[in-house]
Image (cartoon, rainbow, N blue to C red; front, side, top):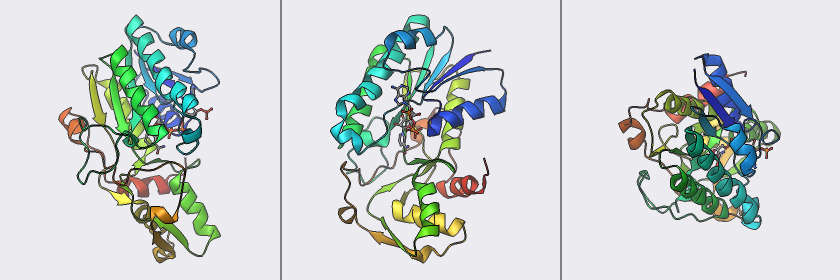
Length: 284
Ligand SMILES: NC(=O)c1ccc[n+]([C@@H]2O[C@H](COP(=O)([O-])OP(=O)(O)OC[C@H]3O[C@@H](n4cnc5c(N)ncnc54)[C@H](OP(=O)(O)O)[C@@H]3O)[C@@H](O)[C@H]2O)c1
């Protein structure tokens, strides 16, 4: 029996990791820490929470991409110092660390999917802090596994998919950006991928990419949500990023290659459209 320590356990991804680990009942004891239970910027508290032989799955992060532009030091504390604390604590007692990172470490100028060894060049404060977190983790604990993901949503909470579903009931038409392309990722599928890494102790010292397969623009994703819920997709209109100004620049293209994931013998992710319909059909 191994302990799984989940940080950020009340977040979109963290709650799915905790629920799935419990549902699978593999005998792993799950310690779920919300931000109130464990602040990952508190090195002493982190050290006390990590035990020998455990797998820490770090789902805690400062994820307010636009707010980070004017709050970079706080974002850095949570996205870089926090993961450093976790990696150091894991190294001291002999625990594993699976750390979650983001497509926003890339600048989005590529035209083919980013491989794990592509050169990061973040365009936003959030991206810079997440890249600093990756580097801190690798420096403190070379055995750690860093998993970059992108465009994560769930069927509950506040995210792009739930927002589109809500707006479908409130507006006749809506404009959605069509010049940013990525891979929508269902939090449950990502949680399953992270638990698969936990289940294979031979996986260490790697950077991996996990998203649902395929690519879409936000406009295409919005249309897919409308179609899946039986609404007229033509009510979603395309617009450009320039027409929808936000404080933080986003990568125009942030598709992450699954090659390293597949080469590691891990289960390939299903296509984003299949994951979306599964998400929208779920009641929990
Ligand atoms: N969502 C996406 O589209 C996306 C895309 C790419 C990568 N990611 C990465 O995926 C991971 C999970 O993201 P998510 O979507 O689940 O984000 P989320 O819903 O915002 O969850 C993040 C969690 O971290 C907690 N947290 C914040 N500061 C903390 C601290 N100092 N100590 C401990 N916990 C703290 C938050 O708690 P409070 O709410 O109490 O602050 C929240 O529950 C993150 O690493 C994120 O960078 C997400």
